[in-house]
Length: 251
Image (cartoon, rainbow, N blue to C red):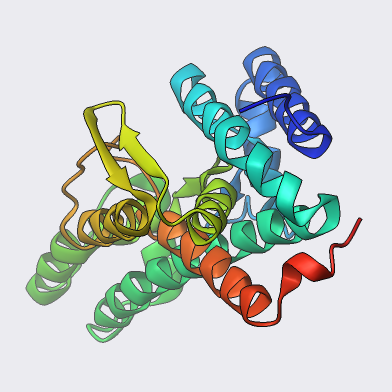
């Protein structure tokens, strides 16, 4: 593997510093820097980037930083600093786009269903904040709220943290550069070629997002963020490979 590259080292240091800052300042740091669902009052535009440097626990940051070191180092050596950072942050933004798109895909129909019963947005938000049904609701409204409010609330209060989307983009870049490299999961120690391993991981994330069934990640993982990061990294690398990026490094 060799010595860690400079950009990977700096990203790792920033992530670790913010992780320990979160342990000190706790909920306040997470409220400021985690990415909240845009309808939530805690949402701020800077969170689109700041959440990429936040992590939810020791194992979360440990796995992400290990992957950043393992795959980021060889990718940066080939791409150079600027192209590496372009892939890294573009994948992070792609992760946001996919995950928020997935949230809205489920949030808007739930909201529309509640509004169609005659409820107002103000009533919905009040019941959401108090976690109690109002008096005087019709049977249809009560049944609808009990059916869709849990998912509506889970999305409204959802927040994203972590560099996983960025790292999935780097993993895709590594796979494009080294399709014959053999990779394996800690929980499944069977060597698999990168050209099969990475699409397999993406497919598992898609299945997990649709079914809610977790395979190798915690159940609260933003699966579509992983998919968005990987697809973004793949598209960028496919374009650069097609245009012979390795002959025009951004140093």
